[in-house]
Length: 404
Ligand code: GLY
Image 1: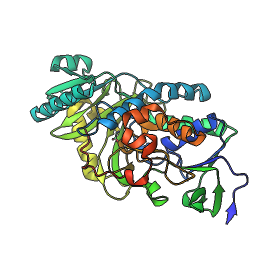
Image 2: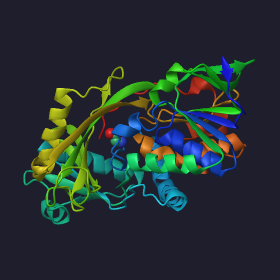
Image 3: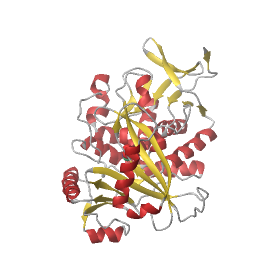
Image 4: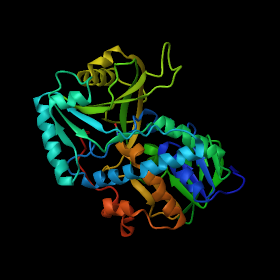
């Protein structure tokens, strides 16, 4: 066994958007950090569409998650601005609202139940007539029976954000990125004091942050399981991509369509007017298997083109499957754990991109001995109030969630 040279203040295990954001905010707070990941950004972040959608992803029985999501969304603009200042790079944050579409009469009935839930939660979507929905989004399919407008649900680009974080971390003298996998935590009389990697090196540190997505469960006793999500990427020529994020239900199945600028040179004939369109996402319980399924790809394309038929003209670029880290109650595990030396930044399930900036602030607060952001405790006091850090309070039973 080798021991890495000098011990940093912190080892962060996992360089997805959450781990990388934690590492970047930690060096910003004056800590030295080693970030450990064999393939930074290649986990759930790689599949994610970047939905910042606490309202349109809210669900019955999950008001704490909705409040947490609102707090997560509020942390994004400062995070994006700070990252742009540090690197000159764009996170793809686009604050343009989301159109929620309902395909048939049953989907409209569901939309109305969901609007009633929003009224209870104090959220603000507005039901639209078909005409006003098409005025807002002219490419909406003519069979779409109903819609709502969610002005506050936005989108960012997870891959661009991870690339910017990578640049920021490589430029920072306090950060080291080590491309190896963590295999085991090192403990000394119950305190976590480091991480062993798959090259046989022990990275000792003052604290370890577990941000390894669903793989976190292989390193510590945390109730995180893989829930697979498939997304598709298209290259949409001018006039075929929607203006806004369009999401909704098609005969009971959830789907979303996310347009964003596509870099030139992405494919033959690609111009600045082309859009990348991300279609997502399946939600499948089961072990991580990165091969997209024929049925998943088919269903996503069928439902996306029901909402936006012009997508038929787009080039099919990619189908990607990665597993999200889900917890029994769908709330993430964030902040100091009951094990001394071990801090958590995992279990974000469908909200990894949305909650990355808030999670980074919270974990750095925990590392530096500051109070966790009040937004966490306000959103979910049972989970994040200082007295609720015992591990037995984490895996609260909760019915499986049907994604919106
Ligand atoms: N938040 C979007 C998804 O997980 O599919």
